[in-house]
Structure formats: structure tokens, C-alpha cells
Length: 171
Length: 171
Image (cartoon, rainbow over the protein chains, first blue to last red):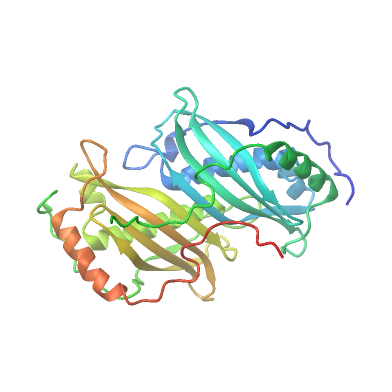
């Protein structure tokens, strides 16, 4: 499919992509009095929707029964607590992509205090709606992904990307 | 360090791997793609970590008694297969490592009836002092239990999906 059967929004080539904003909802708080680990990922997944909307693979993509995007792997670092009502700012940086996949990292900051609260490195795969199997990105998406990737290429790779989980042994 | 806990601890399960936690995919965990959303895999795994902590003598009474909490520092999920609303889940948990304040866990989520692997989760959980909200050594009885569990888990093979670094493999 050459062009999307719905209008695409204006492409934002800021590096990193910096449009997504949210607020910590009361139902995201757990018995420890802070945002629960699962809801960090809810917040990050909504930032993925905002990012995917840039390349025309968000809600309309599924509503029009063209395709879907599935996360196949995710890595979260929980760097600092956020509480109910806190404003969140989430940036997104494209690290790599191929014909079917997108590798990127979100950074979540406290919206007013500015500290890093968490990061989420993800591998997203394009899925054909009919078969529910992996498929190449549509042309319109690939064209935009390449522009965004080129704009993000100059950014340093965040220290939280490419991490291996483990307990460091003291020498 | 707390020398004791002011409540009765449950009988310790030392099976390798642990295989007690069960759950069901709730309707509110399903997204517009018609399957369990990425974030709620993390919620489901967090509940499996909760089951692990209860076996160690922690859990709700530990928090309600204002003794301490456990915080997830980092988590890595592989999404291996879709799960639909109402699907039964079976979890296994392997202790990969532990130190004075942290545990390194590996969970696997299986479809409860069909048996397939749906997802894996590698995670680091840290003990937190209730008053300071900072890291603290495990309470003494918990450290003893971790040592006992380690004796049965240390010889398990390292899971293939543990210790992953995310990236696109170039063909």
C-alpha cells in the first residue's frame, strides 16, 4: 500500500521526539504509595501510540483493518518514584529499524521537576491485520520512519539502552 | 537490618523452579488489538513476584506493618505469544541470584491449558526500608529463606531468554 487511506499528521523531526504528555492517575498507584510498575508500561505504551501516529500506524491503522503493531520485547529501568497527579513528559528516540521492526527508547521525566523517572527500550513489530503475523511496514510508514531515524541518528545512545540485567558482584 | 518479623511466616516452598502462582487474563487487560496489552503482562508478572515475596515472608503484612517494601529496579519482558481475555496463566519462577538487598528473578508465563510459553520476565527487586524509602538489607529471616531457596535453584540451567540485550540481528 503506497499511501495511507487516512490523513497523516504533520511529521515532527525533533530529536528526540518530544510530544507525549500524561498525568499519573489515581488508579495507577499501588500499596507502596507510588505508580505501580505495570502502569509505567501503560504510560509508555501510550507514548508508543503517539510515536506510531507520526508514521501512520496508530489507532486508524487498526480501525481500518490494515495492520497492528506488537511489542515483542521490552526493558524498563525504574529510576525514581512518581506519585499520584504528577505530570509526565515522555521523549522517544529511534535507535534502529528494519523492514518489519522498530527499536526505540522512551525516557519518562517528571514534567515540572525534570528528573528522569524511568526508561523503556522496546522492539516493535509490524503485523498484518488478516494473518496476525509479521509483515513489512507500509510504504508511507517506512518513508516517515527513515526520516525520523535520520533525524535521531545524531543523538547519543542513552546509557539505559542495550542493558543486560544482573546483580553486580562486588570484588 | 530487621532481626525478626512480627508475624508468622508461611511454610517455605523450595521447589525448583517455583510453580505455584496462577492467574487469569482480566477483561480490562485487553487492548484494541484484542489481546492482553503489553503493560498488563508486567502487572501479571509483578503479581508473580508478589507470590515469590510472600513465600519469602514478605508481602502485604510487611508493608502494612510499616516494616518495609520491595521495589522493582529493572525488568525485561519477551512477548512470545498472544493471550486473550479469560486465558488461564501458569507462572514458574527461578531465583537467578541474590545479594544482601536484592533478588534477580526469572518468570515464565504459560497458557494454563494449552501449555505454550506466552512471555518471560527477568527482573531485579530490591528491599526498601519503610521510613527512609531507601534500600536496606533483607530482614534476617528472609535472608535465611533466600539462602535455603538458593540451594535448590542454583543448579537449574540458566534460561535461554535470560540475560538478553535488545537489538536487531542483522542478517
